[in-house]
Length: 440
Image 1: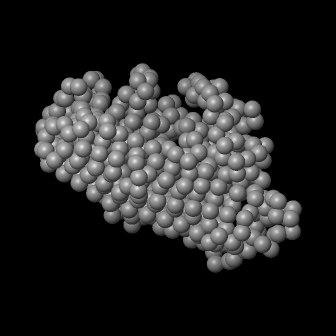
Image 2: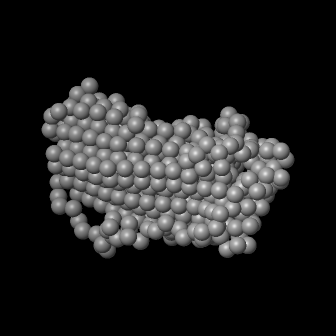
Image 3: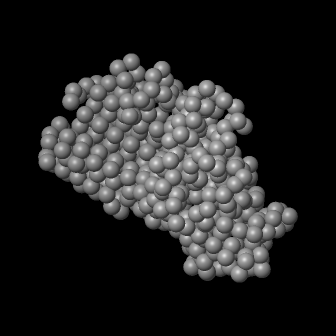
């Protein structure tokens, strides 16, 4: 492939982004009232343990009436036929040995709620754990959350295309969100955990197993902490953490083992994203262990923009297809900017670093501006595809890209850069040799 590199000084920002230190200083854990509510006090509503949903509903209502509290779930298995809908100022604390098993019966997740699906606003089945318009919410503890009969949900993907196409058509035609009603008969799988338009969110230490769709999905949220979570989620499209239209987000100390992206930063699809003007920004990712499809992704649904992301001190727990992956296409628009990746190591991948404006070669009219991207101190043991791949558009190049202190020990194609400008390369090594060499 052609390599077009311009070794020039990187241009400065038009406006200085927030520093990592300033972001971390703003992010605070939610304040939860010191009141305990034990879920077992509602056991009589559980139909002899066959359905704990009424108990969780009653506990949440008690928390609401008491202006908040901590709902404690002791060790044991809790079958739940339907969603848990959160209240403000409430923590759901799963003690070690507690297992929440959500039903695989789709009708249990009706009526529909306002959500997004692959970046389009619509009404769909309720996520299993859901909150909208709340402040101060938390899910903590050493317990586990999973979907019952994951294979049942997996079968939906082969049936989802009519709804997927309809939702995207509504997006492009700017159909009012209130008229985008899906749910029964449409086969759009619900997320496991979604907080929508919430502020001060904490998800800490829990274990997550197979989900119908994305696992943790904060949408339009501010001040979010996801910490110490362990994933063992291998169902179809089981992304680990997908912040969308969200800001001031801290993701740290996560152990990923996912069937899809570990972290995928989203900001809406096409018209919906551009109209929202709510970029995902000021995000810190640190001390994570990656294993699954891709390590950290930005896009492809990112039309409102992804800005000011810091990825630090992360490593791998197993194989990945791609390590760091920035993806967009000519349907999206927006920008991906001010991305800082430092001290990250990968084992075996297909591509170590990939930046593309041509994801699936789709779209027209809305080319994304990808710029001010900084990689420093990145190592990779083996890349069976390409070590570093960058492709912009001729009319809108990827610009201001810094690649420093990068070592890929074994690689098929070392580097491919097309339609990029302002690329700075320093101490970039392939197969133990500096520069554009190949080591199979």
